[in-house]
Image (cartoon, rainbow, N blue to C red):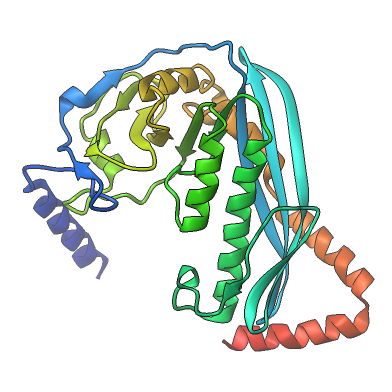
Length: 317
């Protein structure tokens, strides 16, 4: 059976190779794709800057869950670097309780941002069960607060996310962030973007076998929200990352600046500031278990019993 599967995979790969013109699938009609060509690879070199680079990431863990509510612990971290030296770090953490009655509401503990309630049939929540909708609302909150957290910083902002909004709430929040008149950069470790032949954009670019550090741009002749490129930030790196900046910024210069802080052996070719921000924001399984124990100790036996009953129902869905 595996032999047949491998043969089928090879057949699919061969069919992809028959496509003469390859381009990244556009996100919408606002994006006009440009075929992938050798000439759009630009060599980059490390470029240091006197500006403070502020790397931001967020982490969360679901402490309690039932079919009708979700309690999540969230942590956000910002780390400032200047001339490769760590200047400061800031951490913000708290809880949100997302619950479903006639609509989905969110109560905040340690946070204070304007956040709406959602009707159960809100298109943002798509056609999913209530449990999934609770998680979706929690993810929207995390995304919006990460942007709000970035607004409190002074310096060039590097986010561990795309600058292309997933919904109208993110779009509004990002526009507010852009109004601060500072450079905003988005870096994605992974991407599921595909080309017109069904191949991963990362694989398609790596097939050119370019050496050294490079920036591939442009991919579209017209766009909205942000300018998109793909970058290899260290000559020894095997990874290609998705990079986005505001239209007013020079994407190749941004790539060169990030390359200057992407030579740490822990993850060569990935901006070191984002490694640190991830480590500070990440909520480990051990920490999650500790928070759950603290909550149950305070909640008492009766609540724990009721919660276990909820959990049984949840597993039956």
